[in-house]
Image 1 (cartoon, chains in turn blue, purple):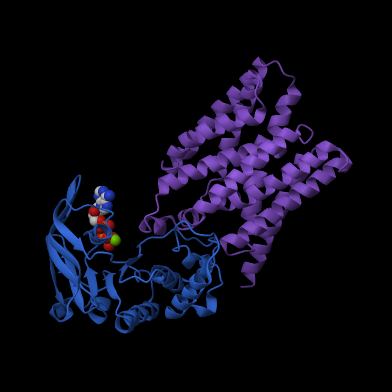
Image 2 (cartoon, each protein chain N blue to C red; image 1 turned 45 degrees about the vertical axis):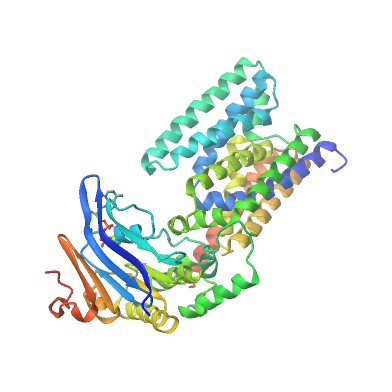
Length: 227
Length: 267
Ligand SMILES: Nc1ncnc2c1ncn2[C@@H]1O[C@H](COP(=O)(O)OP(=O)(O)OP(=O)(O)O)[C@@H](O)[C@H]1O
Ligand SMILES: [Mg+2]
């Protein structure tokens, strides 16, 4: 019982002076853990923005399952040391819309649930500005989980993390994938990690792409070199 | 002290201003707009002078100028940081110049200018208090409805974009609310010292409180303390109330920074 959440057919995208994605086709099934890899500037974030409907493809098409709820952890965030909100209150920012300014009991419970899912219980009341890089990424992840997404997209969430912290975060993501059946799209240029966690890959290169189950990802590229 | 009508009006107006400033201030600080707020109040100075010149109340002149310009100024917020500062300086200069021109054309004595620039407690009539109350309540009602989206847009602009929040609409609504708040707050502290109420209490609060609502409550508290105590000190010493309010808020901010550096060391 495969259920296609995203279907991309012959998609190309041009910015005014250059082409970023060309003739790309792939599907994402429910429950899949897709790793998107590629060098800097190859168009990974651009592809995500197409999926999020922030950019229109120049040609080809993308179909997203009706009513698909997407949780997104963007690549960049402006959170400095002086950022005042606690991790809890930062997470609550995703409860948007025309509602009462204060949170309902259900909303508060949901916040506690996601905080547990990412193992941040012990520091949930501390200002986010003072959290470490890994803790920040977990907080961003928790915020993306708050509206019960079907699909979770992480853009370079592990890029600045040391190996242990990286694993810790990815273990959380993998658990969400395995235990809750959450579909994952994980963008990275870390080959090691892509070999280890996702079950499918999409490898974007300057002049094309390859994709398939992770077992088909060439082992000679394991050291993080792009050939 | 409360047997004088002007003192009762001043306390009433001051209380309203403190509440609106505390709440709006938290967003002003989060959106990194203290400088923009200051510019709006300089534009307000020109508006107040213009009002006097053509026979309106200073408050109405101020409202007209700040509201119209807030929408124009909003277009700047997307501009590159370095350019924005220069453009704002140019706008400030132009409007202060206009303010001086209108004042001199209207042949009022210079104490009028002092009142608009530095605030005055004596000048507030009952009717103006009513108008300020109406404006304040209006600001609070609008805030109530856009609260969650404004909060997301102010504290996590990147995330808000993925939540499909219309950042530009929120910004414009916010700037109009800011124009109202500036016009109201200027009635007590004057247009030159607007940040004393619209920035400092909120900037202080973020070192002690870590949710948006608690920051607002604390900022209101700091603003109320400054206004109430400042009015009282002004009453018994006959020194300018603005001086006291500014000193109190600056002292609170200094204390907050000190507290923060000590807390950081012990962490
Ligand atoms: N709005 C835009 N207009 C023009 N060019 C753009 C725009 N957005 C991105 N680009 C260009 O498109 C290319 C792909 O950018 P993208 O951000 O998708 O790369 P990426 O694969 O995510 O890189 P990284 O690994 O550094 O995050 C880059 O050359 C970038 O300069
Ligand atoms: Mg990217």
